[in-house]
Length: 173
Image (cartoon, rainbow, N blue to C red; front, side):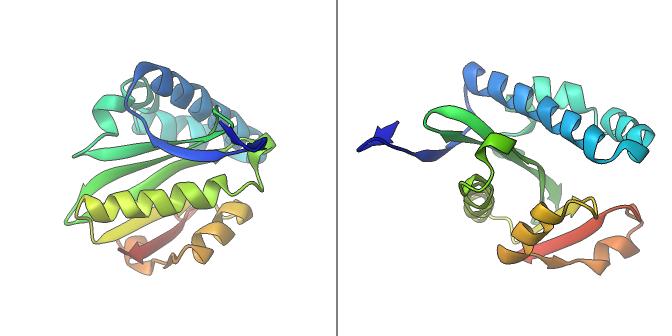
C-alpha cells in the first residue's frame, strides 16, 4: 500500500495461511543468514534447530505463536513481507522475544524497531510483565536496536544455566 506514492510499512499479526507461508520463508532466510554470519557455529546452529523443534514450530506457527501461547508479527513494506518477530510464553508472567529477522533489502526502513515496539505492546495486552531475549554476541545491529528499545543485560538468566554464547537481555513491560 502506498500513500501519495510513498511505500508504507505495516506490522500485522500472523493469522492466515498466506502470512504463515511468508513467515516460513523468512525464518529460513534467517537461518541461512545465521549460517553465513557464524560459519564456526554450524554444529551449534543445527543442535539449536533440533532442540527447539524449529521446523515443526515454524510449519505450525498458528499453533505455537498465537494467543494465548504467543504471537507472531510480520512486517510488510509496500505489501511485501520483509520481517518477522515472535513471542512465546515462558511462564511466570514472562515472555521471550525471538526469531527477529528483517530482510537485508528492508534494513534501515524502521521495520525492526516497529516489530519490537508492536511485540512489546502485544505482550502488555497479553498481561506479560517481563520480556526476555537472547542474541548472539556478534549480532551488533540487533543488540543496538534492543538496547534502544529499552532492553538491558539480564545476568539473572545467565545464572539459570543459559548458553555462554548468548547475550541475554530483558525489559519490564
